[in-house]
Amino acid sequence: MMFGKWSLQNRCNREGIVAVAKPVSIPTLNDSTTDFERLFSIWKQVNDYFLDVRFDFSGCNFLRPNAVAFIGGLARLIELRLGTVVFDWNTLRNNAVMTNLCQNGFAGVFGYSSPGWTGNSCNGQEKMDTGF
Image 1: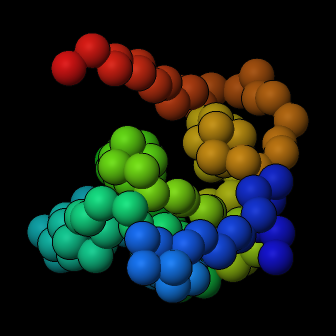
Image 2: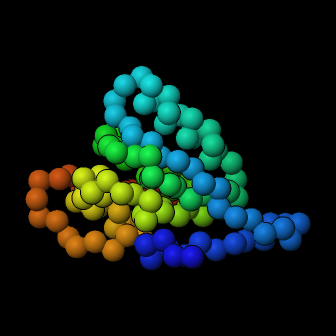
């Protein structure tokens, strides 16, 4: 099964049991207290080692930039903890959200093929520091 350019791969855990990516729903996220509580709830769902996660955007109609940064950070944390992350771009049906994620570079960083943008969106930036 393909999601963007990423394929959902089953992995065997130490006991030889095939692990399937855990679906995590990304809701509409703005800037209210409730929205921050939702972000922390998502973090609680993925706060583990060796976890395979599939982000599902079917319930998302808006993402504030702080939510985009938070979700990107979670994806990198999962990878750092030897898990895998799949952004299921086929579930993102809101064109405005998809356009924004392409314009700010988020979608491209996480596997969605999108053309460059010369408009006024701020590009997301990552600084990978592996020195512990």
